[in-house]
Length: 281
Ligand code: HEM
Ligand SMILES: *[C@@H]1O[C@H](CO)[C@@H](O)[C@H](O)[C@H]1NC(C)=O
Ligand SMILES: *[C@@H]1O[C@H](CO)[C@@H](O)[C@H](O)[C@H]1NC(C)=O
Ligand SMILES: CC(=O)N[C@H]1CO[C@H](CO)[C@@H](O)[C@@H]1O
Ligand SMILES: CC(=O)N[C@H]1CO[C@H](CO)[C@@H](O)[C@@H]1O
Image (tube, rainbow, N blue to C red):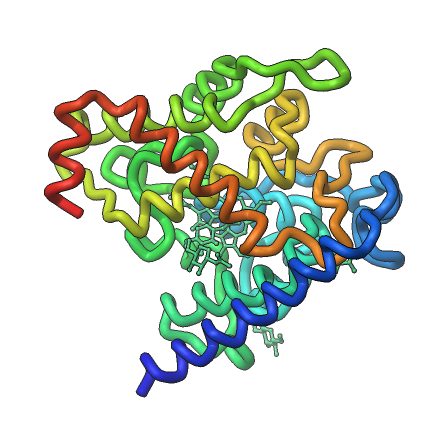
């Protein structure tokens, strides 16, 4: 029964996504400075005040959701958040499409066995291991080494950002698809070798690549912005989403980046690792 409902939900969301993608193709892009809709936090690059989390505040493994709480766009204590509010916040702050902004919170609600429309959650609940949260992340140590998945792991973040090989139009370093693939492969090989409880199913590899691909799509790979976003979980002053399409970042568009990152990761895995990965999938 649940399976049938979720099948229809997926067909609905992906048809909707396809329609939004077509509208994006045929309508002109939004102008810089006009991405956040009028009246929403971040309009004209003005984000509400950043306050770092205090003891007792709830935070999760996702830098984007934590940043929304740090700016008070989601409740600052990270608690009692409705799935609908999370949807709206991802849509207006980062310009994920309506289809995407519905799909992910709905997926999270199902994962937590909660009702999308009625229930609320605390951010830490989102870090349920092997729900969405997984080993070999780029910004967190594996759960085996660090129980608190709400804290950024600075050594990984610094290593990732200093591996950037591209150059932005403003001259600052730029993270590329290939950089993400390379660092992701490194984290997977290291985690597999050092974490006795390591696991990374195929679906979690795709989640990993999709979560990290936001660094390229939403943040355009711009290293100075990413440094603020990932280390402080703070939205840079004057920042605006790099997604200028009118209907936001759709699955159809996003998947292109995700597949390139994931395919590229294979190239950097040592041959032995590739073999054993095939067998466990
Ligand atoms: C809408 C609901 C969202 C949910 C439920 C969610 C959930 C998660 C979770 C559980 C993780 C941890 C995965 C891991 O173990 O690495 C994660 C990581 C991440 N998410 Fe989200 N996320 C959401 C939205 C977003 C948005 C809008 C962005 C970008 C603007 C984003 C960017 C990221 C990034 C960059 C990571 C880090 C990946 C890594 O460390 O490898 N997320 N997310
Ligand atoms: C959580 O939020 C709802 C409204 O969204 C409110 O009715 C309820 O009292 C809140 N619960 C707590 C524990 O703050
Ligand atoms: C995009 O990828 C997700 C899984 O990563 C898949 O469920 C979905 O069908 C894909 N959507 C499109 C429009 O390609
Ligand atoms: C940041 C943001 O949401 N900007 C635009 C992108 O998407 C929505 C529609 O999904 C537009 O209304 C926003 O102006
Ligand atoms: C923004 C983003 O790509 N979030 C993804 C993170 O991983 C979860 C796990 O599946 C996906 O549901 C989200 O789409």
